[in-house]
Length: 298
Image 1 (cartoon, rainbow, N blue to C red):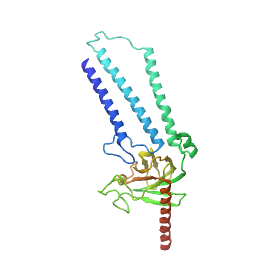
Image 2: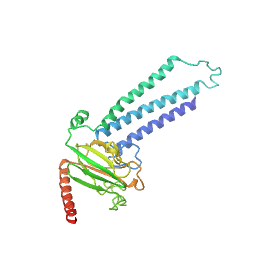
Image 3: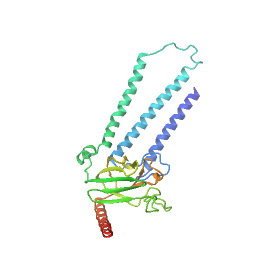
C-alpha cells in the first residue's frame, strides 16, 4: 500500500510540475519567434490564436484530471483485488449501472470538448467580414487587406492585388544570400527565420490571405497568428487574421517541399497605420522604378 501511495504521489507531483512548466514557458516565451527550450505556444497575436491557447489549456487540465482518475482506479484495483487481499475472486460478469455510467460520462466529456472545438474551427476556417470580426471579438477592424502568398521552391512571393505591389522574400536559398545564415543573428533577425523582405500589415486590420503553390505543395504557417494553410498548385486556399499587437513575427513553410524546405521562413511586420502608409508609399515608388527599368530594357 505504501508503494501505491508513493507511486500516486510521484505521478501527481510530476503532472503538477509539467502543468506549471507549461504555464511558465507560455508566460515567459515572449512573442513573434520561438525561444530556446520553449514548451508551449508562442504568445498569441490574434484573437483566434488566443482562443486556441485557451482551449488547449482547458484540454490539458481536463486530460490531466482524467489520467489521474484512471491511474487512481488502476492503483486501487491492484491494491484491493490482488490475490493476497482477495483470495476468492468475484464471479460477477457485468454491472448494468456501472456500464451506463462509464458510457454516459465519456460521451458527456466528448460533447463538452466538441462544442467549443467546432466553434473555434468554424472561426478559424471561415473568412469573416469586418462586422463578423466585431461580433466575435469586439474588435473595430482598421480596414481590409488582401495578400496573395505564392509558394516556390524555395522562397515565398507576395502580392498585394489592390495596391499593385509584389515582391519575393528569400532566405539563404535564392538570388540573395546571407539573410538566414548570418552568424550575427539578433532577436529582430533570428538565424534561419529572417527574410530579405517582410510582409507588412497594419495593426487591427483584417488580412485576407490567399495561398497557392507555384510548383509543389507548400504551407504558409505563422504560429503566433494561429494560421497554417497549404499552398497547392492549381488551387487557391483562404485564411485570415487580425493582428492586435505590433511587432515582428516569424513563421516557416510547414509542408515538406524538397531540398530547401527548411529555408522558407516567413516574416510579418505588424505596424501602425501611419507606418503602413509610409511602407505602401515606399513600395509603390520602388515598383514604379522597377517597372520603368523593365520597360526601358524591353
